[in-house]
Length: 153
Image (cartoon, rainbow, N blue to C red):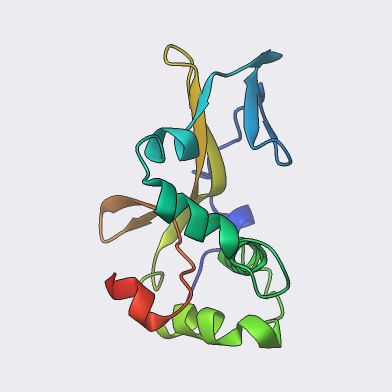
């Protein structure tokens, strides 16, 4: 992937200074006030109990989706910032699949791991990347599913 390092990109978005994310609670604060909602909660509001139970069942542990997702997201963030991160062997199939794609080739990176907020709705969230490619602005949120079969589901 040919990327433009951040220091070369004057269009890189600055973080929203007054927006804070608390990872453990998965909650946001804006100007020292807790926000009522986050995007994850909004998207899961009508999730069936069985589906939520399956998500919770496979979340934790050394092979859980939480560590897989965090590791791959961290790798992509560093990669898009042209920092050449090492590829953890355990997660190499996922990372190599990203490297094999041409999606980011020639893209201008505008933001990575960027937090956004709607103060009127008291809701915040984040996306994984914002790029400009072929004249189009594209927003992306990486999903690190368990297998190729899960992509089709």
